[in-house]
Image (tube, rainbow, N blue to C red):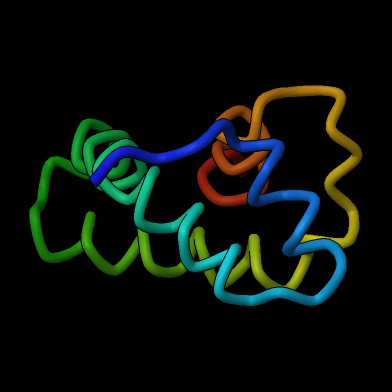
Length: 81
């Protein structure tokens, strides 16, 4: 599947379109899992951490200001202590 630029999904998601947020998840789920696996070095824990990061993103999405890339923001709120 070919994805559009993040800002396309972000604008829609900020207006309440959760399908657009789902598209962001699909687009970046491998990134989140790979990052979590590098940090945790355990596949099961990495899967859970990636899910948790997207849940944090979902609950904090209105705080996304667009000053950074979505993946940078996801890393900051999901994986940075």
